[in-house]
Length: 236
Image (tube, one colour):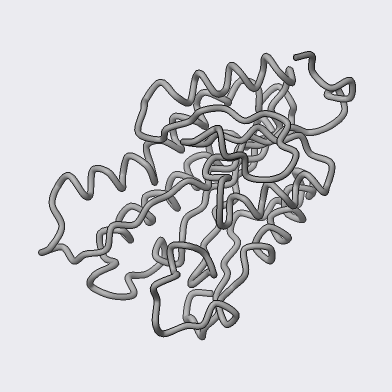
């Protein structure tokens, strides 16, 4: 398949976790904004929206997956303007309940995989002079809400720190990072939460809208952090 004829001018975003929830909402919004989307999915047979430009197999637990997906994106479009690391997992349980393997799995998906993906795409992002990196963290990356979200919060604190490290590393090359910290969002992850109705939670489309605006800002007006909450939060 030949690349679309306008890839020289249309921006390209790689989005992990784009099959549902916040990632799917971001993909749909950026498509409507005119972006070309490369979606990395565990199940590439189930694209996240009606007209994906590239869907590629991507398993966040596979250390080689990021390089393969990045190479396929560059082969298709010839450029990468943004990396949006939206894939993430939560294994509920307190420090006393979870095993080392549970923490390792959350670190693998929530921290190590985004770091590898960013490194794989870095040369292409730097080449644009205005590369953008979005890391989906959480309000749990700013505070620990409950004992059973404690170790999840440990990984999300690390994801928030990763975004800061990216910002420092890429500033001189025009690479800007944005860490997104939502509270309760109406997604599959919160489906079993009995304390909130879906309509009372933050909606994925609203997060996608703000990310869209942030991606359009120039290097001289960079937004480093986007916090979203449906409740009164000291840190929001």
